[in-house]
Length: 100
Image 1 (cartoon, rainbow, N blue to C red):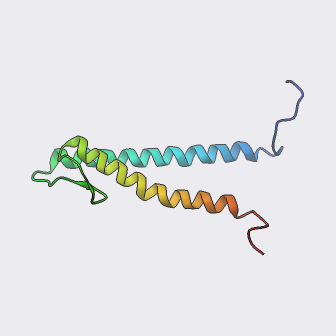
Image 2 (cartoon, helix red, strand yellow):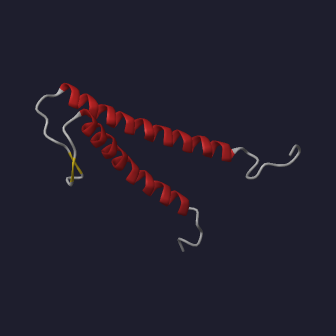
Image 3 (cartoon, one colour):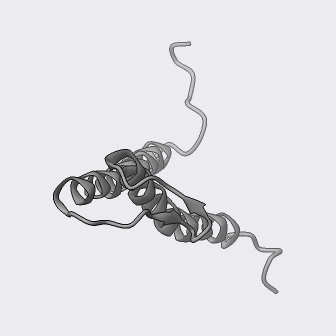
């Protein structure tokens, strides 16, 4: 409604926080795409490749699709695990009851 105050601080930090999160998610998605693209390019231009194994357990075909999945998933995990830890810590760092 017109004239009502928005929820949250008046200094616009919620908007900055949302933009920051969107940037990080966009960068994450872009880098996962780069990993998948690198897998496709590797399968396209390098001859005699062995079948990739995802995490050493899941065998993938030695095709462009197999290497794209390998590159994308590997990049997603390598970036996603530390990013998840940062999010976990940053949400709890301001908790006054967490540290005495």
